[in-house]
Amino acid sequence: MIAKFTDWRTWLRGLAAAAIGGAANAVALLVVDPTEFNFDAGFDRLWKVSLISAILNAAFYLKQSPVPPRIELPDSKP
View 1 (cartoon, rainbow, N blue to C red):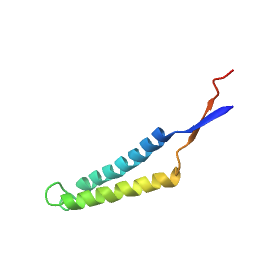
View 2: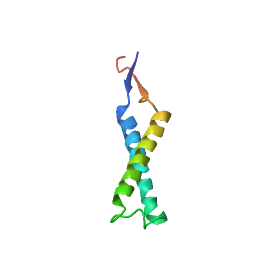
View 3: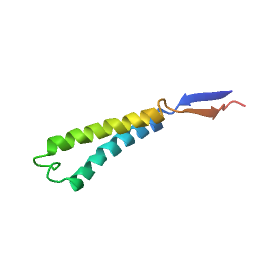
């Protein structure tokens, strides 16, 4: 008999990595347009773009991997 369980930890790490990667895309705006997106006057716009990018990347991850994968473990009984 094979025991099955869902690998939530790996799935949640992937989802968090997608969100963090999306938020990191907003850092590119600091280089592309530093007058509009900066930490002084444009921080509210930078925050909004970062949040939207993180949500979009998390949604793309959920499209690719909508449910956590199942891992099969061999039964320990002889």
